[in-house]
Image 1: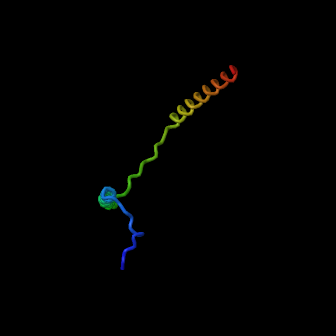
Image 2: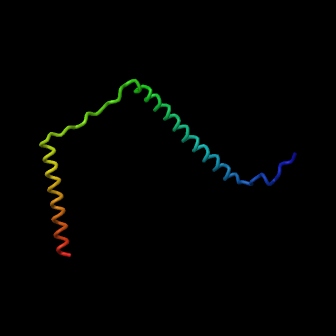
Length: 90
């Protein structure tokens, strides 16, 4: 049984070597990724027995809330005053 020449794609040796190098580079990247994944999986298994840390919600005192609210109102008033001033000048 003869091989049809239509099925063969002529390639130069340089092209073949470049293709092989590209495939090797891709395989090295995949191997590194898989090796890292294995280490990460072991780390997750080790930490799986521990309960996750829960952060406590920060609580502001009423005085602190009032200071923050007053400061924001002051910023809003300054922005409104600036807008009014620009509107009058225009």
